[in-house]
Length: 261
Length: 285
Image (cartoon, rainbow over all chains, first blue to last red):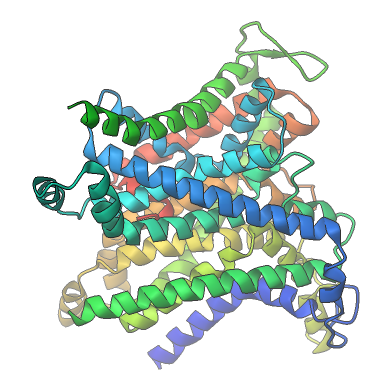
């Protein structure tokens, strides 16, 4: 009895979490132009989508921003996590403390702060400023994620490698990075998710030339959204879902291996 | 010896540049702006004033502050109430099932939060799916007002922020020693008592972590009040956004932001006092 109640509760919460997404996917196959009643099944909106340049451009921007900012955040974040772990220097505590700011302050503050500095430096708002902003809030998450693996790493391994004549470069690329891989991957996953999910910071740092999908939808909500947007959302979700499934399967395999040892 | 220095340089320069240019500089700059005067044309006059901070305590703005805190507080409370039974139920599953279910919690994140708000709009509006279904099966005769009110805003906030409560609670509940729970039940403690005397104290860091990650964003998510509140409701996020983009009074907007940062600092201080670790925030480790 208790088990049934528990499972029922889990189903209800997951229903709550997936309902709005399910509705959008459903209406992407709807013959009616209004997202109100499901009338019949069609692929019409998917064909429409490929003629809608504004939407395709928004999709392109979203993917570019997410991809580039994830890659840069992962590189800078991994190097930084290692540096902060390995070396001591004056002001290290300050740097460590400041790193938490993007994690904890309300996003809107970071958004307007970046906008202000962009204006001060006379940077024109666009893809560049948007990517810079995304890098800004992704890096700390990568650092935290990599650091949690670094802390469990045996420092003697590096010493042994060095005694055996490995150069610093070899040690970092052949030993440190492979050992940090779980942290790097989960950091990358986190950065990608955060970038795709962000609204608030993008809203202030994108500018008119760099409409991303959420910003496009935001501006369309007042005038009415056509089902080709739903089609686009469905395609995007499909792509990301495949990526996540692969990464989860890989993680589950590792999990299985670890628990069998 | 020299190459050692070069490597140290290589590993530290990026993070120092990043922290100075993308974190310290922007925040110090809005702190600076918040003491300037705005002219009538959206520009700023460089004379020092604390008038912006005095204006924050104007009755109109105090009421926005209070309303935001109320909405964020209620959101946090609802998230706690939903999350505890949820993570308890998950923790009773097999490890593999647990991993899969927790990944499923993250899946909605892969669709942008604003787009999911649009999904709620399709569900909640007068002609929306929920009203259609309820009318169809005859439960109601008139469509319900499910949005453009506080209810709609709360649905949006709880929906968007729930995973931020579930994740830390889950990781802290998995550290609770099962033997303690068995001992409690052997000694005749009721379910209720076990929950409040053992589970809650043991998951306190996770609970506070989650509350922090729900409460602070809830103060700023202007797009939720915009879409599901119909633009009638103002929280701090809307206020700051308006000062920067519509009213173009940057100094005042900056002053509100600084106050918001200070409020956040108080909560973080409390979190640290309770023994919370900074690395646990945001679910990255």
